[in-house]
Image (cartoon, rainbow over all chains, first blue to last red; front, side, top):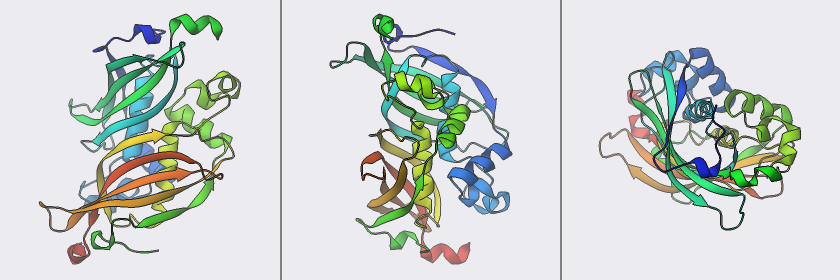
Length: 152
Length: 152
């Protein structure tokens, strides 16, 4: 697994995660805890919803996408994130779907205030087993510089 | 609990949720599943991070804020959401913090395509026990119209 520092990120770099199959249990467990709307918790009511069946909470889709992206190793030296923008749920994530995440580097901005870090802007997207984009968001990550490593 | 339809939302309406105290166990459990970065899972390493202590995953902050907001009852007739924008983590959420969520109606837009629904744009924010805003995001929700209720 690559141990990437701020200097290693270049605009256009792509990181692709392994895939994961989401199950009905995972969808209902997450929703009961964090997003108990009927189309996330109740297969009967979900059938009558605009989704015509059970779908994962959009917040679970964010969580699974980010977890998969972490598995690429790209964020080993991530210090945190100030925010995300342009978050879009494009397709429902359904029980049995297998998703993977892709991150593309949009920009790299050295910190003016801290010489040991910089901001990497990424577009995170996740895709299902049919290659359809289910989710996309842009995020900024504060990444440690290699030269700062000795200070840790 | 109010049973609100699209017609009931007015620009400037505010909804305030009950509070919830977040625990170290909840932070570590969520992070192990969805965001296993050391400042979310390991109190020793977290102490050396820029947060100087364990902090909740930003994705858990989204999830808890949305769960608390659902408890206001404002989204009983929510059909789904196309996306969120301008998501910002302003303060870390730490073990023992008690947070509550506030939603403010920013805009209401009747659907041109479907006469049984409309879009309500909201600013969701969450605050800690000291009244500090920890998180904010704008979201669009598709809400059922009252007049469409008989068709359900």
